[in-house]
Image 1 (cartoon, rainbow, N blue to C red):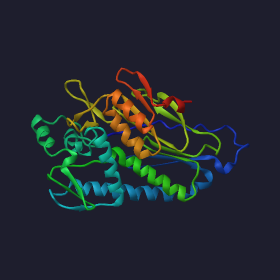
Image 2 (image 1 turned 45 degrees about the horizontal axis):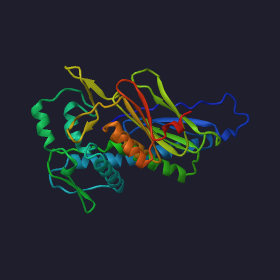
Image 3 (image 1 turned 180 degrees about the horizontal axis):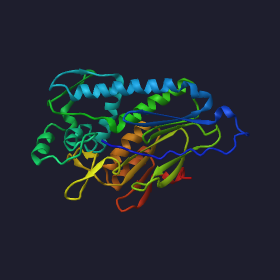
Image 4 (image 1 turned 120 degrees about the horizontal axis):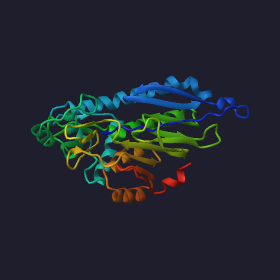
Length: 319
């Protein structure tokens, strides 16, 4: 449903003679969840990196398998899934209700006709779209007694709009149990910041300026918080009529949405920041204001005409 990118830049001090060298940040990068995962940890914890990679890979594979099992199942076939997938689905259902159906993991039933998430882009026929719409909608998925089933064979499900954030959060829990204190986990822009850099100052997170190479739209300082961004500038194509077709589809109309260039959200958990970034992308500014006030989730919007709008206390996190 979405793809995001946050530029994460950690500025190292020229000299660390006054600091505990064991706290010097060390960067580790690997590929998982279809994106580059960047972990910044203290040097004393560097030897534990393989454990983090293994944990994240196992959890990712489990969720990916559960999702595929449901999508590939026949109508009314019962599919048993993991507790983690159930947790993600329950959160997805909350966003679906809050957005009056705009946030919907079954929009992939229609979006896949356009080539999303990872096939060659093209415009499907009107007949193909109308046929797929009949099988789409969260009401076509049944969750009962711990198992999933579908009303139609062709219904697909894609929980990636909040599953990546969930995986980051579970990885953070794993790391904290293993003794990590000050670190950053950045999974393709879903970022969680734990503790302080050198144990002293908040980490700086740089929000990307869409369509500008290495451009920086905003700088924030975080500790024990998450931030995620949903945008129209990573996975999209321009059709023959010059319209931008993004990977974010609205569950009310099952059409591609292009409301903003980017929407960034700060929250207590990465899953919440991740899910709300997509939900807010599908919402009007007035709707975003109402939700972010009640949920206490600061928002940074870049509109299609390049206006930068700060909502619900975003300014207090700015450098």
